[in-house]
Image (cartoon, helix red, strand yellow):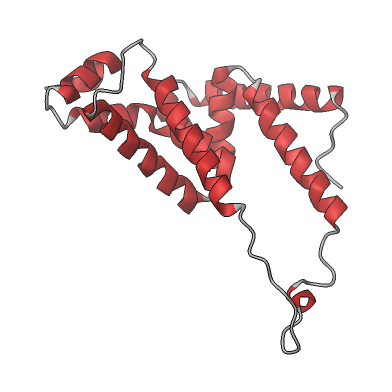
Length: 194
């Protein structure tokens, strides 16, 4: 049976009724958007793949437990699960181990002498955070192409096939995304270089 024409709601219903293969259809349908969002947040492909897999494991478990109520918003529901897992990841990894100097071990020997200053690091982190926030304000079609190109490192040919538009349209969306980001950066007086 060709499940590709089924709506998300129909696919979830089929999954609940035991038609396990429909899960692959729904994952493939939303894979690029969900993975792109995760990748944009964690900036590490291996971590993003782990969180992506965990997201769909939670989706499966919640659907099987009857904790999914259809409101026509499967993608938003799944993105919320991914978002919560990203937050959990950062919470877990923000715990810093305390190191103490002893006669045999000096904590300060662990840090490079000529690294970026704390102020420079803060400015870079704030700039990247603001840039991620600005990306969220882009129109969905521009944001989608930008995430696929820069965070998923997809070619414009692959983006064209994934989004169902011509390569020229994908290029145009990317161009407008960059123009819009530059405008927002100018308005907020943000520079990407230090």
